[in-house]
Image (cartoon, rainbow, N blue to C red; front, side):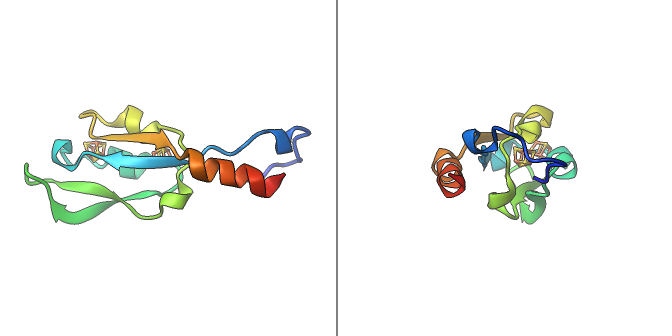
Length: 96
Ligand code: SF4
Ligand code: SF4
């Protein structure tokens, strides 16, 4: 993330990273999560689930910022995100 100025407490805050979990067989292929992810983390897979729909897959896991927007948008509770604590902590260690 780029700031127009450097926040005074930047070193005290750690960046939160997320790990996306997709429950493939719940998905109905609406693409909301793919379309509205602000970081371009997801894309639709070529594969089909048990219902015959394409489901999302992660393109670049390192871009997920744990905003949970995909989780909130999904009408079928087929995707959620958990904080990637290990890598979030690593980010802090690098910055300080
Ligand atoms: S949590 Fe946010 S950044 Fe991560 S995949 Fe979902 S919408 Fe994208
Ligand atoms: S928002 Fe939910 S149902 Fe729609 S494509 Fe994403 S995971 Fe599937």
